Image (cartoon, rainbow, N blue to C red; front, side, top):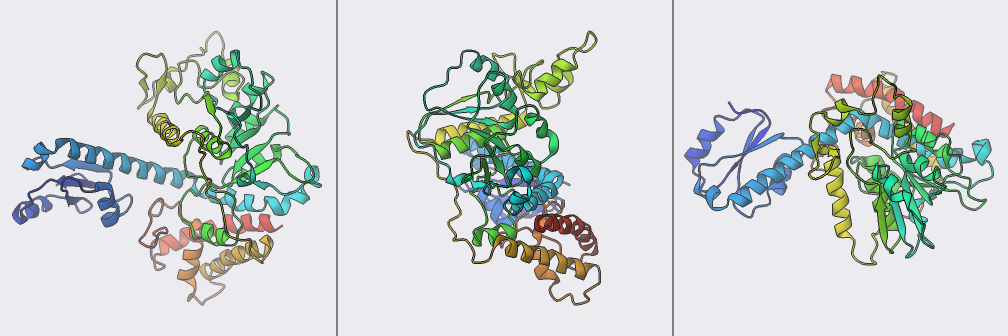
Length: 457
């Protein structure tokens, strides 16, 4: 019997007898794909089996076509393996962080509503859409927090009319050298990056993802009475119906494609905001035995603070963790995650041409005639209706399937749903007759009912 979740690529010629013999040895969750040279292998797999159907790929090398087109089949297998790895990595991310993304997104929807309720910002306008910001043809410096930032900043002289975008972890390193960024990018959905803002003041121009930790907004500068210095953008971490509803109502800011790395996202933002030259520093996608971040960042300070006669700066366990490898010709190391971000960085740099900037995915829908509060009340009522059905307060289950579909963010992080998109373009879910599924949805309702209540408070 073959290994589970494996797709086998069969080069031509295909005989029925040969195919039947091969199929008889496959496990129930494996499959055989007859593949001719030139076929779009990724498209065929997506079309016939969807996402997360397989984890491994093998080539059946018994036919003459493989020898004649070895380069094609080897490349097809490598492409599929990369696609499978990305699908499962995305699924694991959603399983671990999907609920946090959704809760942060809902709470951040209320930033505009709660803006006047915060004493320090009582006279300020609501957050701005990052799509409303433009730097023309200004030169932009994108700063990551990698160790090479120290070398770059040693002899750094800011050019005239140069704009600086930095990742949130790099703020301390810049301010320690008297450099104030024009925009700080924040993506982190958990509390870890709040320490990046400790000691740097609360007068920062921040561009914050809608799924980022809501407390990040507290560090945004006041701007002036007409414009705040908190900018919002939106990264669709999966396919959810609430995104369509809010987008159609005109309540979503500019959208960025999912990238995973705040440094790569900062580069993308620079390409969107300016048509001028862009230079980068500190986007290393690598580390050394004694340096993961630039000096002045919280991680670097913490490393030096904990160093004693018995505890070295070197962290061999982290540097040599499984999957890491040395970079040829360098003392630095990297790992699969950083290599993936490096590849995405290189793809973005190749896509930029001359003075042509990128276009943000702007929300061109006119604002709804309903107020944001009215729209959010409708969304909150969907959760309450579903809660009443699942708790038995409302015995009428005729709307159960509809409400489950509309509130798909409740279960988008479940293991059987994460990163699985159905033929309709939305998340696949178990049927409403699945009691295990309904019990887990019922548990999620408590978190999200409370979140909507906080938005509308």
